Amino acid sequence: MAGTYDSEQQRMIDRIKCIVFHEARDAGATFINRQWIADKIHRTTRFVSEWWEKSYDQCFADYSNAGPKLKLSQAAQDIIREASDWTEEDFLNLAPSDEFYVWTVRRPNYQNDRVWAKSIEDIEDDERYREIVKNQACIGIFIILTAKKLHWVIKDKGESWTEQYFRDTILMQHVFPFLKDEENVIDPYNVIFVHDKAPCM
Image (spheres, rainbow, N blue to C red):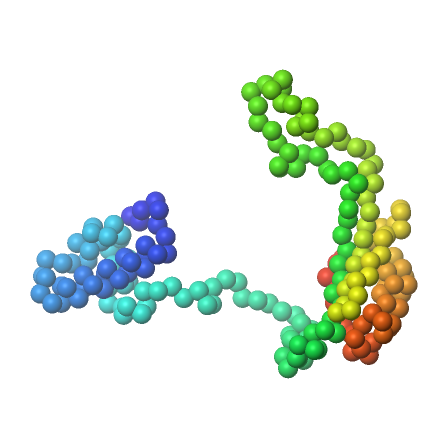
């Protein structure tokens, strides 16, 4: 029976109305019953029964425990426990990283490339779909940054982000030497490499 434009705000108002009408009935308005309230606020009698004997404080939604419960691995819980007493200076020792791709020609047919027209002749040349380029060039880039410096590595042409390539080339030749250099990090002995859980890790 709730309206089409039902919202949490409207439900909160209707909960309060249930309590107010119940108090009015207790004060002598004997014509008020659950069905009368349900008709008045356009809700079911079940809704009225759930709310008319509750306190006003219970009418407001509590979103503090909403959403799915966070499930962390034991390793993640250990890291959180260990970092719970960190200071701002401790966070300066983090070295987050990521890898991404840059295409030399943007892939066609993205949602925002659509043009609506009555006929093809109505579409100007510069608004037509881009030409599909076969075997277009793609540049793979790995980045790592610290409080002192940003370092990037461009993936070798023809290489894939495999576990072997990541370990032998990215980690051994670039990341570890970068993190051991005092020019790049605050303290080489306390730096923490943070990767993004990529499949190649």
